[in-house]
Image (cartoon, rainbow, N blue to C red; front, side, top):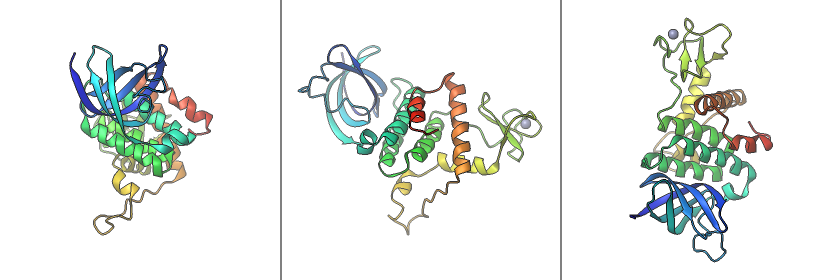
Length: 257
Ligand SMILES: [Zn+2]
């Protein structure tokens, strides 16, 4: 069985057997991996500290068929707010679950990995609800599933109000193709979703740094647009996966979404 070294983010960890865990990792080198961490729930296990959700690790893995094995790990970083603050944890779990749904097993995508690191980092400093919303639109785009907003998905007519979104088709419909009873999709909302999708995390997190080098990444957020972008996202995800994500129940308990 081949040994592999990888940089990994733990996206889910469930207890298994007497002292083991089954973990879902996103790795830079090997893509998404399901792996068993044997004995990691024993206090003296060298794996104990690392096999927690939101850990950033260097791992040694043994390749298996469907399930690999975690041999060793060393902690590169831990996201404090994601493990201590309930709201950050809930929205972070949503992003982790979405990443697990969107990224196929064993297909490395270093860009997606780096983006997820930045997103987890953003949870440490910024409003978790806004971070999760931008993260979700960005992960969809990285997975090639962004909503098509430039032109009508039926006839190709360029975006011009009034437009609507057809969730099932994954894009907007023009005045001729939309049905009367479909809610309108405004140019303002389109622009807001585009801003979220292209949000530069580096600048978003440290707006003062290198101020002379680039314009400040101000993200002005109107409540109404935030809610509209959120409900559109949730409807789209439900249509994509055929069910709501599990983590949404956790967010709902906290009074969000
Ligand atoms: Zn059309």
